[in-house]
Length: 78
Image (cartoon, rainbow, N blue to C red; front, side, top):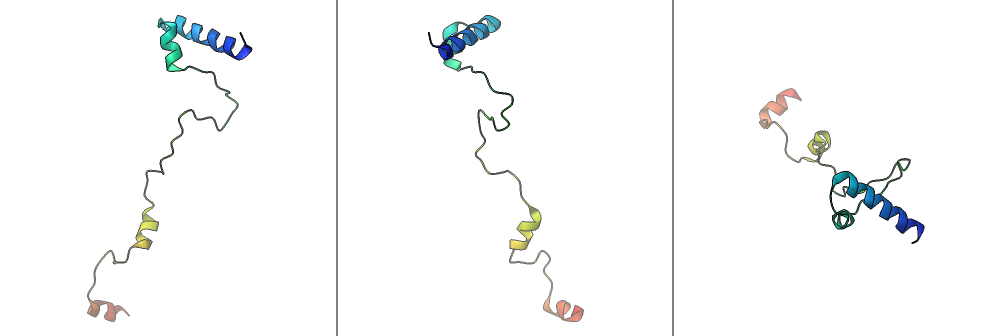
């Protein structure tokens, strides 16, 4: 048995022993080891855009003023 397959088999057997599940279930779930020194490791990357709103940027893109003022009020200030 190649080294990688032997290592995976040993890992599957250890997980099955620790959890009490049968080996077929553990193989189906797909356990694997990870390299903890890999900073970019993410087994399930989130490809969605960030879920937040930059309200300052949003306000700059608005075409309507936040507070409506009459033309006469604007002329008095200017």
